Image 1 (cartoon, rainbow, N blue to C red):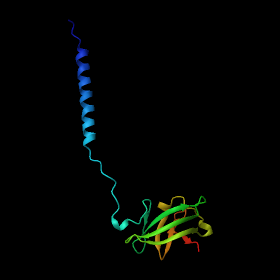
Image 2: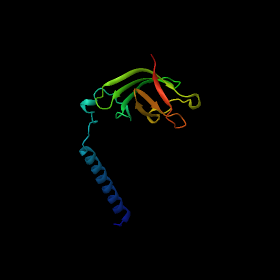
Image 3: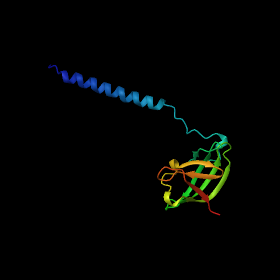
Length: 136
């Protein structure tokens, strides 16, 4: 009978592959699946896509319910950072000086602060000179 060293190597590779697959199968089954963490009860009013804006009074949560395709007005809901109660909601439009005309291209990064019931945002040049005014 002839001795073939490749046959022995093939069985070692096959055994190692089976052992690896079995280990991965067992480990995957043992990993505990954590459910998505729920917001604390005080944040139950907040929509999932609301984001935090800083401000003199600690800031507010802003939820963009609808953004107009022209990117210069939106339906916003504003919530208290502390109590998560709705402070204001409605149609808001951007007001900027003519020299700094801007659109809300990236609201998460452009909204900069909430002061005296006014939501301020940075123009495309990076200056905080624009704000959102509520349509009456």
